[in-house]
Picture (cartoon, rainbow, N blue to C red):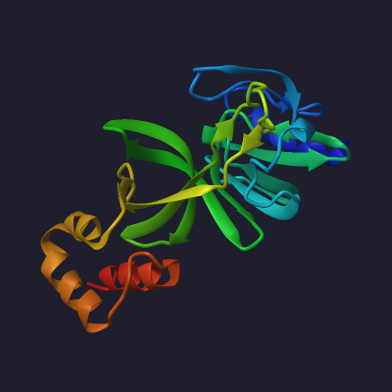
Length: 223
């Protein structure tokens, strides 16, 4: 319990947050609230809500600048939760806002604000490259309930959909804005739109490829 106590002590310094036990993780309500499942354990659902199912040792930097290392971490893209493990017990870090950065498995996640559906939301986004413009990716996993039994048709079990990814950019701490194509990306570059369009065209870069997107944003950060 030394690790858990140390980590909990670090978190408790932040407005006395609660750490929820997830030893027996259950999904009783779908995120959008339109329907519910009946006492389904994770093992009862096909697919996975995780980008990577296994826990990977990592590091958390908190909002006050404290750091906790050697934490087994994973990201739940269905609930938008960062989970950590101690022994056989799994815990959710709450409040999420305590996490400035979580680094594990070569990925870096940060809890931040972003625009979606005309509103500002808060959630975990993966940092792809940082600078005056920071390129981000947000992952989400949908859920499909078990289908009702129908004559002559084998019902599909409850299942998670494959993770979907949406790209965002934030400029020096402003709420991140999404884009899905080159036109949308260029609009976010404002007065640098013309220069960036020329750079993308000259180098035949695609906004559909993360590596090429990183090159685009890194070039913007040099202007």
